[in-house]
Image (cartoon, rainbow, N blue to C red):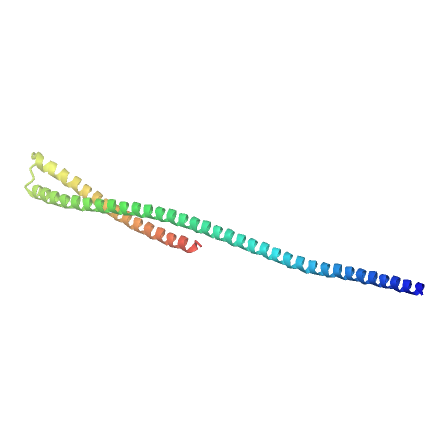
Length: 184
């Protein structure tokens, strides 16, 4: 009987060893599965964190680019406004000069008319060949007529200059509008 009891004990030990081995194998398998899922979850969180950081970085870069672009646009607008203001100031100055010239021409024309009337009265006096004043008056009358003609031409040229200045100003204003419309 002893042999049978020994076999029973030995059989129990083998069963116990098999159970322990199976338990260890299953524990290792369960641990591996848990480790896999924990690793996958951790990797997912890490990937999400990397994606979030990258998205934040891209958003910051885009915002910096937008700010830089807006600053550049403002700079160009200021420069354009300065150039336009200078052009308008030059135009206004040219118009003021043309207006002053026109006023001077009108004044000279009035003086010329007054002198022409005086000379006309002098020349209407009886002509005496020995009267040097009458000869001078005739010359003065001719010179005054020429001067009046030149003043008239000067007034016309001044008027044309004012018109050209106004056209130029209108052209610049139109170009400024076009440039502003083209800017983003």
